Image (tube, rainbow, N blue to C red; front, side, top):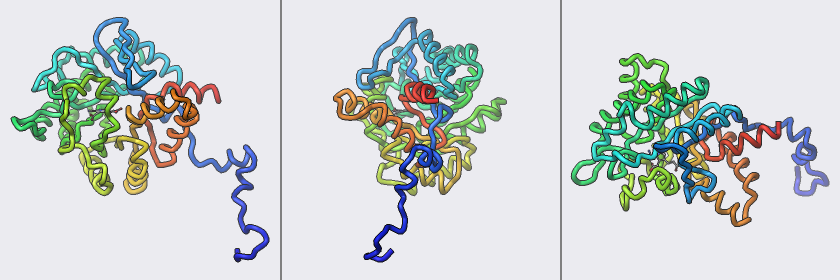
Length: 334
Ligand code: PBG
């Protein structure tokens, strides 16, 4: 088109004019199949403790978790991701992490017994169990030890698999954990247990509300995770981390956090073509909730837009605290 043409050569607005043509050219779609619901579980009976920095999210005991799981199943959500709140039994060596009668294995067994078809994903990392709130074992200087931690993660993953976890999800960022866990699972006969590797997990400040929820914030204190989680400045490093986890035998690959890292989601999907997952983390949820509570954003519209954006960026699945609300909405629309 020349600068003086009387008419635009192309009118993209034609396709946007009516709902039928908008529907026809829509590239990405969100469905309940895409959602994973993270849940916080604690000991006891009848306990529902709201997480103050995450309105709408509570830490619940197993009996209440079963109600939540029932709704997730009814809404067509494929899987839950379990995060334990360990109130008693934290230690420097985190032994509670592989106690076969601990909270996680008991909850996994109950969930699989009641809802055999619901996927159960467990978090493999020591932070709920360590007295210092780090994801691994530390030396006298506070440095998180890699290979010593691998031995603990292996025991933790085996404990979860033995309880019936469908997917173990190492979120600790130690080097070599996927290979170590994979070979331990194989040797124990757990050949079907999938590994969801938190491959590109950044040292993010968006995890604050989660650390309140699992009660690791106080233990971590002024500590940080910079020596193992990734620098938010880096992108090539994420590709290298995912590539290593592919080589080590992971089945699913996570980018975390979500919205500030959509470029990473896109690169992982485009360059490596693997099952790509993204975690819309606690801080992202808290931001949307806070703005909505102030009447500054239309909550439903913005969370649905954020979830669609993950799909557009290339995510195959999304961990989100909005999973139930989104699935309810999708069901109503259908
Ligand atoms: C730690 C873990 C974290 C989250 C999930 N697993 C926090 C951290 O690394 O300190 C954060 C999830 C969220 O913010 O929603 N293993």
